[in-house]
Length: 142
Image 1 (tube, rainbow, N blue to C red):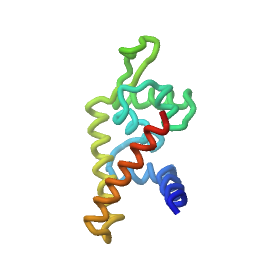
Image 2 (cartoon, one colour):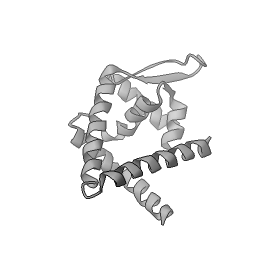
Image 3 (cartoon, rainbow, N blue to C red):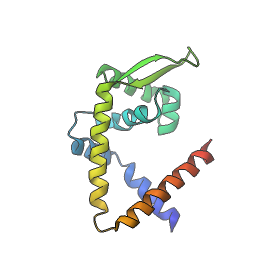
Image 4 (cartoon, helix red, strand yellow):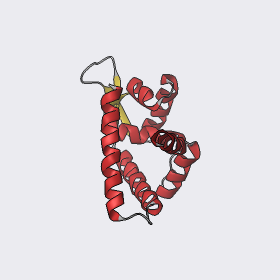
């Protein structure tokens, strides 16, 4: 039951049309293929392209090209890593952060609409348990 629910959720979340719908809901101008990378850079940054590719399950060369597109739109900047100068890392700009904020607001609207018939207690319990699951997954993935 748990596994099936997780597979269903991940499958829905990973559908490319969901990113396009979220971009539209957020009212922003962004190629939907760049959506998850921009959010990832915001959440993880500064982050190297190799790590970003690993985390998104995409090819390094594809991610590198897409990060260049984000840079051209001034949504991120690239700089040598402070830990390893051989590595270029991506860091979100203020313009990029504003876009991610619009995305987060849109996500909150969508999730709130999904949970309209849930009690406040159930929503709070779901949030707590999802955080706990995510934290366990992060530990497991190391």
